Picture 1 (cartoon, helix red, strand yellow):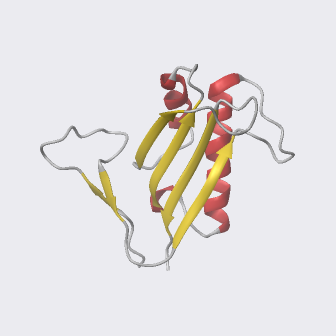
Picture 2 (cartoon, one colour):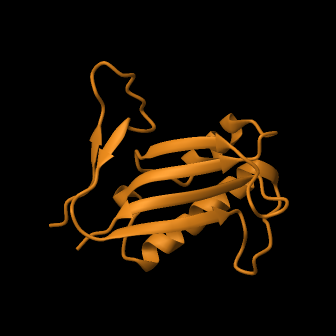
Picture 3 (cartoon, helix red, strand yellow):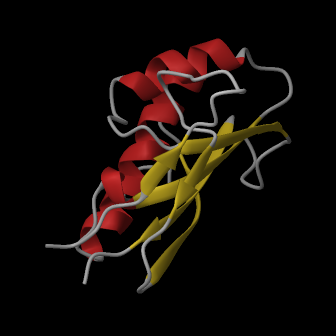
Length: 129
């Protein structure tokens, strides 16, 4: 049986239901998922604003994980870059429909590299053996 990453929540810190304060990755192979925008298989940005782009970006992360025989439970870290002009609560709400794992997360207000993109998401996963 493959070990999954272990969440770390020190008692002196707030425990979030959505993300742990740290993760211990089991020894083994690591997958680094490059920044994913809310683009479809043709590379076009999906319509519908931040919520639709967030859902699609996460589905793109899931596709990369699946190609490496991994799942959200193997992800130890997500970094989410949001356009500084958007409301992060909209992205969070949209992510709950797609992302089921409790994963360490960093959210930054930085314009994504793809013109017109409102969100870009990258991940680090500890791959199963």
